[in-house]
Length: 165
Image (tube, rainbow, N blue to C red):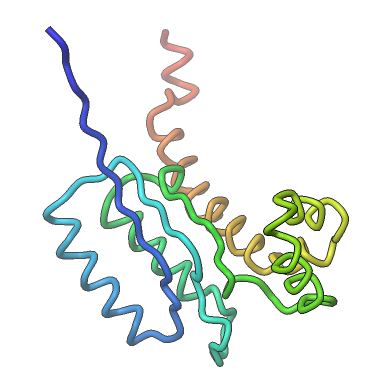
């Protein structure tokens, strides 16, 4: 007898989070959805922020709040939330237009043109510095680490319990 395993995931794309009112609407939609479905993982692709955002705080603050709420609602753990940057997640950088024009021009005949720029152009990688910082902070949030440590401490035997063994 053959058994089948069903794997469900949620794919969210192009968030373009700019302000708190949009964030509330998006979270409200996910709250009702979380009550109906369970997922093994969540994939969030592209444009976690809007590059034209005139936010007073960091442009990724709302995106981080949203991802934290997704983690809380769907109870899947941050290790099961996969985020991929989009074009709005890239900063403007030196030679940006020149690189884009060259890639567009050469791509039909040179499929490796993008990887050449990734190897040879620190400017292209620098465009994702803010995104990289945001992703690092999301996955390595100190609150999560404290919570994990508290759980470990509460389940590990105390010194007197060890002495009694």
